[in-house]
Amino acid sequence: MTYSEALDELYNRLPMFSRIGAAAYKKDIGNTVAICEALENPQHQFKSIHIAGTNGKGSCSHMLAAVFQQAGYKTGLYTSPHITDFGERIRINGEKIDQNYVIQFVRNTRQLATQIKPSFFELTVGMAFAYFAEKQVDIAIIETGLGGRLDSTNIITPILSIITNIGYDHMNLLGTTLPEIAFEKAGIIKRDIPIIIGSTLPETKTIFEKKAAGCAAPIYFATEHYQSTHSVLNGTRQHIAGKDLKRSTTFSIKTDLLGNYQQENIQTVLTAIDILHESDYSLPIDAIQNGLANVRSQTGIRGRWDVLQQAPTVIADVGHNEDGIRTIIHQLTERHRAGQWHFILGFVNDKEIDTILELFPKQAKYYFTQAHIERALQADTLREKAIEKNLYGHSFDHVNLALEQALHTADKQDTIVICGSFFLLAELHAYQDFSK
Image 1 (cartoon, rainbow, N blue to C red):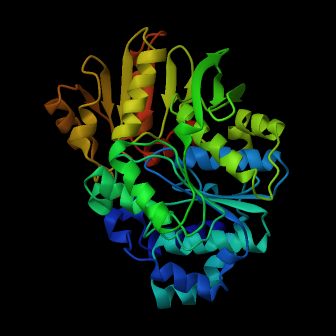
Image 2 (image 1 turned 180 degrees about the vertical axis):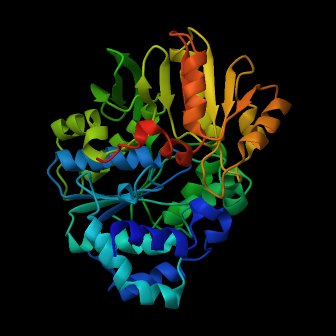
């Protein structure tokens, strides 16, 4: 069996959320429990940090991993979805999972998969846990896939839990109100395990406080510990000035993740580091500064306000829900006022697309496209929905054709933004050599 054949077996023989959507979502963790029991419960063989949230959980996961790596710890990192290669999901010290391990795992669990009939996500969570246990990581940063309470990753007992924020996404599965969604995310809160809430809303704060109290879990709200401002130095790095509200100290943090929204994520990460200092981990200030300044090179993260070129500026971002798109528009308004805005859009078909489209400016130019997966909203359908919101443009069968046209149309002072889906970015030529 080759690596490609192993991936084909994972992608095509198991229900995969990215391909078929809600039909692949299991509303219990029984399969994951059964898989891990068959693997001798690897999730109990390493320490972990569990991170959930509507947006920002991937960025926070990568930031914490970078800091741990800089501090000299052997650091596992599990995130999803990937952009171009499955191995992006499972990393140790930034290196993707060994391809031979993937091959062996698929081969060795074939009979188990036939018996249990897991989803793609359930089996690959087991793979990640088994890999981290075998490689004896010092710490593993585990990002939830969807929700929290019933997420396959929620069989771990971490040393720290984090919920970055609550917003509208996957409402068909998690609930139609913010308190309902918060209830699902709060499912990762464990007895006696500290929990950090990154961004607080009045209608969700009590949900977290009640759950934490019921679990006797110490709860921390990041915005009560840190406040941040930001600027850009030399057009390449975001400069964060963080103020510890308890000690009234001010210090500077640089990060190579340029999205304005990283300001909020850094507050969450700094709060987490403060709590971790009370554990057996040593995360000195130089490890914090060097880790956050080099998240991309340390962990391989992509798709977070990636500036692919200048004149015209081309930005790729995985923002795909209401809050994600809102932050993109806000950052464009703040930093890219000159010239025309061009949006290359592609979404999956289970998003609240009407609400999302209402966020886009009517004066911009639009290029509607799609990823080539079953869940993709067809480009022509997206264009028709956009016209109803007075957003006009042409449809394209492929994101690269849309980008080619945008580059042909745009002036040097213009800004082109590609967003709406991880899967759209995965088909960009600019990401095809993404092998770190």
